[in-house]
Length: 195
Length: 195
DNA sequence: GGTTTTGTGTATCGCTCAGTACACAATATA
DNA sequence: TATATTGTGTACTGAGCGATACACAAAACC
Image 1 (cartoon, rainbow over the protein chains, first blue to last red):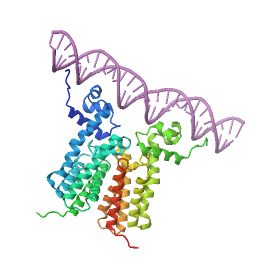
Image 2: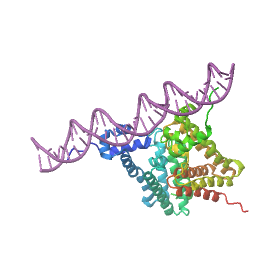
Image 3: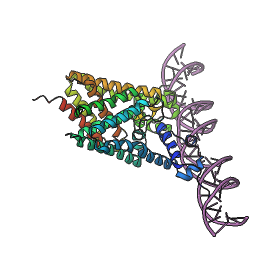
Image 4: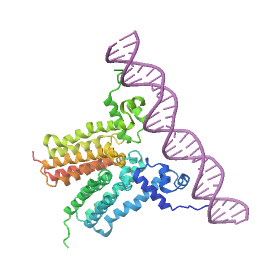
C-alpha cells in the first residue's frame, strides 16, 4: 500500500464538527479548521475532498453522536410520559450546564436551517429529515402515552425544542424557560403516577 | 450646502433589506448590494458608513415595516382572542402566499438569531428585543382574553411562530402546519363567540 | 458667477478565502 | 532492499471580499 494515516478520523471530524457548530459553515475558514483539527489542508483535502465534504462528515457525526442518542430517549424503554420528560430534561441540562460562550451552544442543524439550508437543497434535506424524525419520535411517545391530539402536541413540543435551540445563544435563560414550558405541558397532559 | 442625494433613502434601504433577508449578512456581498440598490459603493459608504451600517438600517426598517405592524395586530383593537387569531392568520398567509423561492421567506431576525447573533452582541440584543416584544404582546393579548397561564401559553405561541419562521424555507408545508397548530390552540383555549 | 460643500464614478487597495501543485516522507509489498 | 503507493508539509494560485483614494459632478450660498 503506502504511508498510513497518522490521525484518528473520528477525532478530526469531531473537532471540525465543534468548529462548525460554533461558527457555522461559511464563517469557519480552512485556517480555522487546520487549527481545530491539527491537520494541514493538504491532509484535509486528501481525506475529505473539500470543505463541504468535511462539513458533511461533521453533520453525519453530529446526527450519530448528538441527535440520535437524544431521540433514542423518546423511543426506547417505551416510556411515553417518562421518556418525554427525560428528553426535555436532557435538552434543558445541555443548555443550562454549558458556559455562556461554549462553542456547543444550540443546535448545529437549527443553525443550518437559517443559514445554508436557505439556498442549499442538500442541507435543506438534512435539516428537514431531522425535523421529521423529531416530530415522529415525539408523536410516537405521545401516542403510547395515550394522548389524543398527538400530532398537534408533537408539533407544539417540537416547536418549543427548536425555539429553545434557536435562542440558546441569544438568551439562555429564556431558552431554558421554553424547555420548562414543554415539561410543564407534558406534566399537565399526563398526571404524574403517584409513587 | 452642496450636491443633493439622487436616491430615495428608504427605497435603497428596503432593497438592501430584501437582499439581507434573502441571503443573510455575510453572504450578501457589496457587489450584490450595488446591484440590488442601484448605488455604487462610494455612495453606499458615503451614506451608511459600512456594510454593517447599511445592514443596521435594513434591520431597523424591517422592524418598522414588517415586525411592528404585525405586533400591532396583537395590541390594538383590544381584541384578545380575535387579535391572536388575526396575528397567526397573517403569519400563515405570509408563508403560504409567497412563492417557494421568494427572497422574503421566513424572518430576517430569526435568521440572524442563528447567524450573526451567535457572536455579535449588538445583533443578539436586537434579536432578543424582538423576542421579548413578541412574548410580551402575546402575553398581553392572552391576559386580556382571560387566560390563566398566560406566560406559558405566550411562550408556546411564540415558539410556534418562531419555529414556523425557521422552517419557512426548509419545509413550507410544515411551517404552515405549525401556524395552524397555534390557531387550533387559540381556538381551543377560547371557545368561539357564537354569532 | 465664483466658491464651497456634498454626492457620485472609477479604479484600486490589502487581505482572506477555498482550493491546488508539487516535493518529500513513510510504509506496505515484491 | 527496491519500488510502488499513499499521506503530509510548503508554498502558492486566482478570485472575491470589504473598504478606500481621489477626481469629477452638481447644487447651495456668498
